[in-house]
Image 1 (cartoon, rainbow, N blue to C red):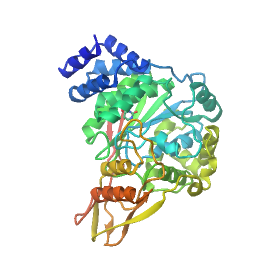
Image 2: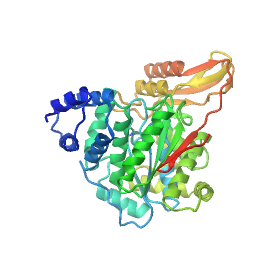
Image 3: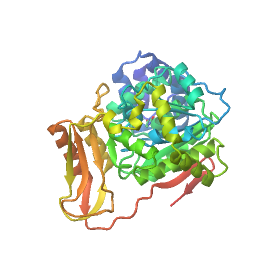
Image 4: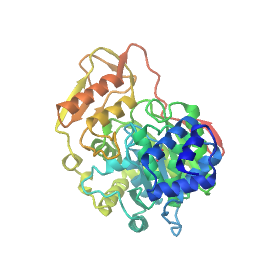
Length: 443
Ligand code: URA
């Protein structure tokens, strides 16, 4: 079949065979297909979906479109965490060094900002000199030495996903369960993991806004993992408002460093500990959840987690003194503008999608595949849903490079932050735990 035939088949709701998906992903990786036709197929998938066999075939095709990070010679558990994408989500920056400092191998392969969501790689690259583009050989050597590398997809790993991911971002075709599942699992299974924890973001700022779809996504990824003997645990976590305070790139690194020092916003710390607990359990590095959490807290309190981050930054060519003086070494905005409440009331909601889009408008995210980010810009939103505020109270700080950028930040906050009279139910940070054994409702 030609690519035109595949588009037509999918447009009309048909089934594409495993062999066709294999050829398609091979050709995407080879760069021989025109973007406009790939984009058309993605849009057809957006409207028609993929069945179970097609999802497996696409995932396998993307996985085998490149090489793998072969870490099977390492005796310890090899566990990674992946988030389906949110706003203010800097958990990976804290979690990877934290869990590695507890003796678990964490070959963390992350992505760039996608749609309105931020990306770990973009955040890391705000650290001067930090190189996320390690070769597989170099990543392997670093993991052998430090137990962790924070890397992006090189052309070597799941290159077909790399191309499709960027095209999905540029064509508004991200929010499709099989595409998200295949994309994430093709990268994660290329890391020869013994376990994977997935943070499935749910709510207004997630790619999937309702719990039913999020559970389906989690179960799809669990199924794909099982085919490769990789147990997957998914936590459904709240993305109805941004995580933590900082939203942007450099400001999120600063907040992550705070968290590694034992500070930072409580929701960031709690989510990191919950995900870390699952990672330690999957790696058999702790006998139970209580012991795992205590081990993680001890690694923060003793400074071991921060030291691990410092070592990783050094090994990847970055300026590790950011751990001591982040405000001096990370890119800083040209201006900081306070954003004040215009009336008395209760913060009803802070729409993360409006915040994510605002950060892109400010220059801190990508609206096209080739956009270059300004890591210094962003928003620091100190207000939380449920807070009682009075007119004139400071709700956020706009971190901008010029007046136009500040205006974009203000417009985003105006759209996102709603103050009203109703009381607001407390946020449930982690609502479900999903494993191959079933779905556990936690709250
Ligand atoms: N993260 C990924 O790696 N892929 C997606 O499609 C969405 C989030």
